[in-house]
Amino acid sequence: MQGNQHTQEIKERLPIEEVVSRYVKLEKSGINMKGLCPFHNEKSPSFFVAPHRGSFMCFGCGKKGDIFTFLQEIEGIEFFDALKQLAEQAGVTLDLTHKENKQKKDAYTLLEKACLTFEQFLSKNIEAQEYLTSRGLTESIIKKFRIGFVPDEWSLLHDELRKSFEEKDILLSGLVIKNESGRLYDRFRGRIMFPIFDQSGKVIAFTGRVLDSTNKEIPKYVNSPETELFSKSHVLYGLNFAKQSIRKHNFVILVEGQMDVIMSHQVGYPNAVASSGTAFTTDQLAIISKLTPNLLIAFDSDSAGVQATAKVWEMALIQNLDIKIVYYKDAKDPADIIKEDPELWKEMVKNSIHIIEFVARLIAKIPDERKRLKSYQEKIIPLLKRVQSFSEKNFFIDKVGQILSINSSIIWSDLSIGAKTEYQRQVYQTPEKMDYLTVLSTYLSFLEKEKPGVSEKIDEFLVENSLVELEKVSIDDTQIFEIENLHEENPEKLKENFKETCSQYFLIQMRNHNKKLKNSLHDSTENENAILNEIKKNNETIKSILDGSCEFIKNML
Image (tube, rainbow, N blue to C red; front, side):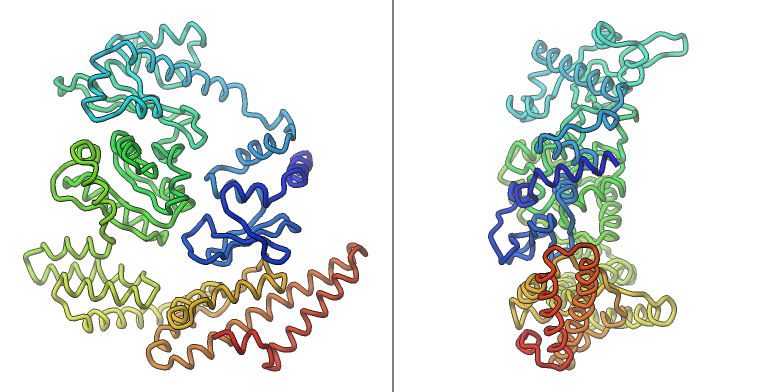
């Protein structure tokens, strides 16, 4: 109950338009406000804020909620972190029982102390400083990412930490190891130290890169072990610096290592992040997908890098991300390319290749024709099936045809065979239901080419009729398979079907809205006349849709 009181008090003190306008430029639209959605790329506003409801809704990507949901999505944080931030802004004191436990707080404090110690060691070591500058790093970027150094001594950090912290806490941090005889020694020795931050910018772990790499028996990189604060599969290096830029530019550059991230940020790409040399995970991908649907992969161009790239794009395709590849022939990593020629790196990012074209180029290098065709069937056809837009699909079919010397009509034929099989599988074996908005979006992908602005008209209609908070409504998913065929064979029928689908959707939503309005009459007598007038207006619109006289439906296209 106490938590509910806090959230309600915060909402009362902090208007949603005030919170949202820090990230989105809003303008008045009737009783609501609208702007360009921060969660997906768009040219016309489909993002609406309803101040009187304290909610937001995007008719383009479907995201909606209150100030807590908005902050969670825009910052990529959990609810309690959003609660703490908004409580501070609203001047609301949270119940002390919700605060982080003492052990966790002490762990953050200890790691921060270690980071400061590493920074101090770096300021006194000329060799380590020269190494960093030889890699192309500037003084300002070194300070921004808080890069440090630890001399090659067995217990230097441990001796420093035990002045302020208990042994058990130092051990739990992962910075110190206990051997079989019970002796404690530093995990990191003689290394450049890269602190790893959580999304709020707190130090949670470290990666150490050996300074003297002549001894091949010593691993080049050593990472902190998993701790209460650090789970490597859930962390992306540099995300605390990158998340706002990812939102702003609507794409993320995924690289392999810390130096790649830092150098990218240094030359004007602060939307770069890394998996810190570990295998990329679905959890890390989920973090990215909350920020942007556009993923640009820039792993090392050696064979291991290509294999790692393939694993990432296979995972990313499952989450329907749009994937491009930064392609370069020489076996170099991004950090080296940026150091040698920053402008070349910028051109490479600018000219990144869509995953379909990239895979087609790889397949084109297969000398055996039969194996080449088999790879085309196994790799390219599934990728083409995922492309929803007809014009975009047509573009990639032509591109694949050029690269692999396959007639585009043959590729269309291969796709239609696959589509028929998929249609039969879904209709006769596992019938599914799909959201109306998905079906309408598929219609719009075809109709917007001929009649631009239809989606904006629909948005305006929904807002005008107080349908900002839409309910999910299911529809038979077989319609999806019919839309593309209608676009080719009977465009006029496609328009008729679209109007009919819109009409059904509007009727369902307006009837649901009327039920809510009628229920609100029982809960409170306040604003009774306004509610009755809104019900009357809705009934008139419902009647006009049913008898075919609705001007909006008639003039939609």
